[in-house]
Amino acid sequence: MILIYSHITSTRLQYICHFIFKELMGVDFSITVDSDEFTNYEGVKINYSDTEIQNSKFKIQNYSLLFDEIIIIQEIICFEVNGVKVFFRTHNSDFPFDIFAASFYLITRYEEYLPHEKDIYGRYDHKNSLAFKEGFLNLPLINIWVKDFTKALQQKFPSFRIQDLKFKIIPTYDIDIAYSNKHKGLLRNIGGFLRSPSLERIRVLVGFQKDPFDSYEWLNDLHQQYNLSPLYFFLVTSRNGQYDKNILPHKEAMWKLVKQHAKRYTVGLHPSWQSGDNTSLLKEEKLQLEAMAGRGALSDLPDLRSGLNGITKSRQHYIRFNLPAGYNKLIEAGITDDYSMGYGSINGFRASVASSFFWYDLENEEQTRLRIHPFCFMDANAYYEQKQTAQQTAEEMKHYLSVCKKINGALITIWHNNFLGTAEEFKGWKDIYEEFITLAQQ
Image 1 (cartoon, rainbow, N blue to C red):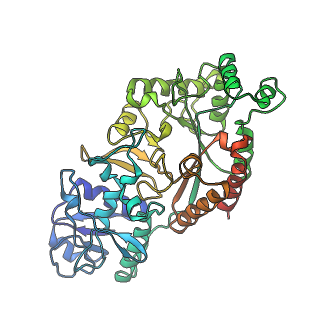
Image 2: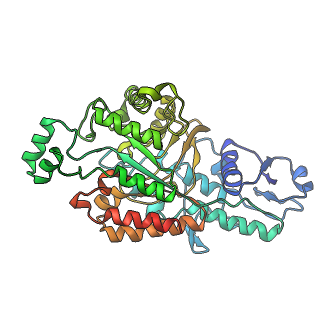
Image 3: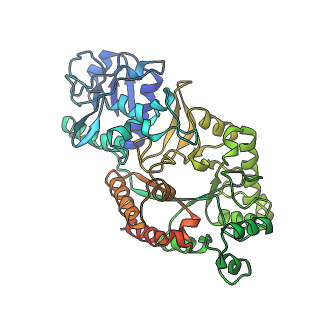
């Protein structure tokens, strides 16, 4: 067990120590304010204070952030250690920066609580972020820091050992436009044809050709081949709008699609754009998906993968959420795991970490029960926002694979079924995805 001395303790310090030591290192820890207890302890110990204590082998000068009870602008000056950016420099310490305070700042998204400009969709603009400004958005910086921190501790305490995490890849899919032409109804197809006349649309509707967005069986074969456990997030709003354009949930085809996937995989809710401002609508959509996933003979049977007794996973449509209101709405609706932590405008590590964590609510100064699963790559970002070709995106994905493997992190990717079908505009993207999945198994 690691013993940490601090002049006082706090919920912030308890939270970040639990994440770093228990979750990333797999070791127990305890925090003490008793200097005598700390002095007499014979195991691995860290003096996290400005106080000089006898028999203290490892000291980190603390930064005030973890002992504040307010949210205020922090003075952050970045510098490099071991080739990566760090901040909250320490002096007369055995580690060059306050890893606890710096990790807390990033993982809680502290900067998103401060005054900032939003993007055109009303979201936190990635250009405001420290990670973007300082050029480390493409790195799981906290995981890298903890790896270096572990080595520093082992130099002082050679017997210190951690439990190595295992790299894992978690493919996830957002189904917000289930089909391009099929099941949209006569009026929508006539309107679509008049806007863009297409022989393909006619061939699909008369059954001579597969819908170009229908990649479901191909994906299932890929998952079976590599024994993958993907997550599917379904948008099931009862009425469409400017940003919600899926097949409506009352259509038999949509029921069938959800039910098929709920039998095979874990399904979660893709809350609509409309529900972003309406908690009641969010709850209605959750109930709708629960009914669809458990329809028919399955309705009375529990299914631990899909949560037929209650959908508990979600990812926001357009990654539309703001802190803390967005996460509080999910908690109120009964969501326990959210996969929205990333940007809908650029790829990278929004919280600078490639591991899941419990959300810390800075307004109420408490760790919540909502577990956050950050993603670092989304096909729509690469295509629409970063304007990349399929091959450029293949190289970007290799980077994320490489850095996540080095720190034994969790690599979560987002793909949409329309990118992986036969639509001409996404030609080549299906191929790079299959190559990526194959490479990830090596």
